[in-house]
Image (cartoon, rainbow, N blue to C red; front, side):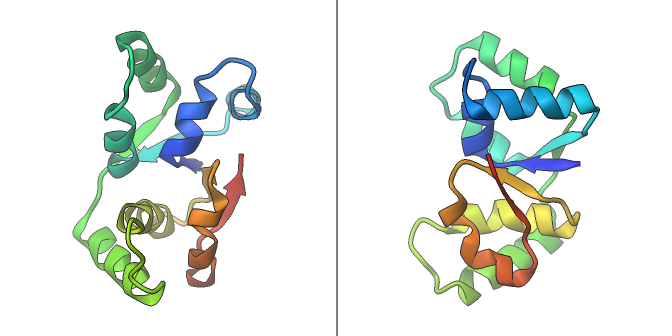
Length: 125
């Protein structure tokens, strides 16, 4: 299973992008996909059309809940990574992937590289 970051999901819905091609490859290979409820919230903030939301719902196998355990890990990641302004949501998305031991596909690897020391596997899409 591959955990999708918001940035990857947005770009994957644009026909002809590298993320679109990679997503199509994963779907053809039968690779399960997931997105955290945190990333899904970011995605839904849009701007989006209803057809884009419907397509994303069809492509994503599972929207993963954000748990108390995720909150604790996210806070630890945030504090360990220097409490950088604007990075809390990234830490929350990363915590969701870490708890499930899933690689995280993102278009913004720089946002997550500092979290690799905590075991996060970053897939650049």
